[in-house]
Image 1 (cartoon, helix red, strand yellow):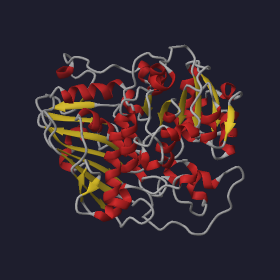
Image 2 (cartoon, helix red, strand yellow; image 1 turned 45 degrees about the vertical axis):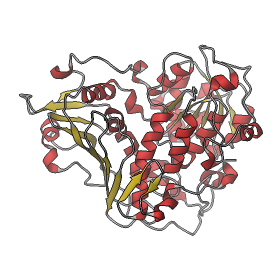
Image 3 (cartoon, one colour; image 1 turned 30 degrees about the horizontal axis):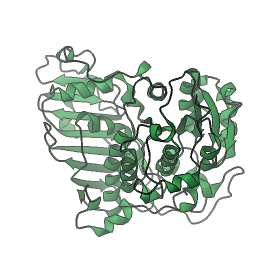
Length: 477
C-alpha cells in the first residue's frame, strides 16, 4: 500500500525518548501522521503475521479474502511457517478447509520479529498471534515502527504491561484492534445499547463462566525434553523465564497457557472474551477490590477451579457492581440467579455472561455474541434475543456495526481510512488491567485493595512483584 514509507530503525526507536513504555524499554510512541505523514486510503495492504500457530489459521483468510498481501511471516518455530504455507491439510481445523496457501507463497520468512520490522519497508499492518507473553512487547515494537497492529487477546501479561501500552496509545492515531471477536457481532453492540439505555435498570452483579479445567496447580518441571528441530526455545520463552523445554508447552493456549510464567490460564484465555461485554456495557473503570477463591494454592500453574471477584465503584449513572469469573468443571452463576436461563435453554450453558439487573436479566455466551434477555414484566418465562425483544425495538442504534460482523475486516477497513476499529488498544489495555489484577490476587493468595492511580495493592508490598513482571531484555531490545 505504501511502498515509499521507511520504518524507523531500532536505533532510531531508542532516540525518540522514554516517556511511553519505559517499563519494557520501549520509547514513547508518536502518531503515524507525525512519523510518516497521513496514510492514503488504498485497496491493498501489505501485511505481516507474527506467530504462525493455531490462531493464524483463523485470521489469515480474512486478510487474503479481502485482497490484501501477506508479505512476511515470522515464527520462532520454522515448522509452523512451513505448515501454514502448505495449506489446510497440514493442520486439523485449519481455515474451515479453505486453501489460502497460494497467497503465502511469496511471503518472506523470519525467525525474529525485530528483523522483520526493520527489513519490511513496505509494511502497513502487523497481525500478532503468538503466546500471551509476547503480545505487549511485539505490539509495542510494531507501533514504534508506525505500523497498524492487530493483536490477539489479552493484550498484556501483567498490570504494568497493560498500563505501559495505555500510556503509549495516548495521542496516537495508529490503527489498532484486539482479537476479542465477539465484540464485532451485532448482538454484542446491541447488548451494550440495551444496558446503557437502562432497560435492565441498575446492574449490580455480573457472572461470567466457562467449564474448562486444568489439572491441580503444580511446580514447573526442571527436567528437559529434547527440543524439536526448527524450534528456537530461547526465543519461544522470549521475555519470560527460560525454563527447561517440555513437550507439554507446545500445541496452543490450553497447553502453555496453564503455566503462569507464559500465560494466565482460563482467566486470560476465555475471561478476556467474557469480560469484554461488562467492561464496555457498564463503562467499567479500574476495580477497587479483587479477590479469588481457588481449589488449591497457586504454584507455577493455574489452579484447577477458581472464582474471581472484582468490585467496581459507582461511575456516573452506574451503580457499584461486582463482576465474577468462574472456571472449572462446575463453573456456573449462583443457582438462585439461573432460573431464566434454565427456562430458556433447559440447563445452564457451559459458558456465558449473566447480567443481573433490577428490571431483568441479559445473558450472552462468553464471547458476548448470542445475547438474550428477559424483563421481569415479560409474560413468557423464556428469554428473547436482544435483536428482537419488543422492549428494545425502539432503542436507537448508537454504535457502528462491523462490516459482515468480522473483527478482522473492521481492522483492515480502518487501516484504509474507512471507519474506526471498535476494540482498539485503549480499550484492550483497560481490559488487560482488569484481568491481570485478578492474577495479582491469585499470586499473593488474598484479597487486594487496588490503587489504580499508583498501580499498587494498598498495604501489600508483596504484590509488587506480580504487578511488575521482570522481562528478559535480550528478546525485546
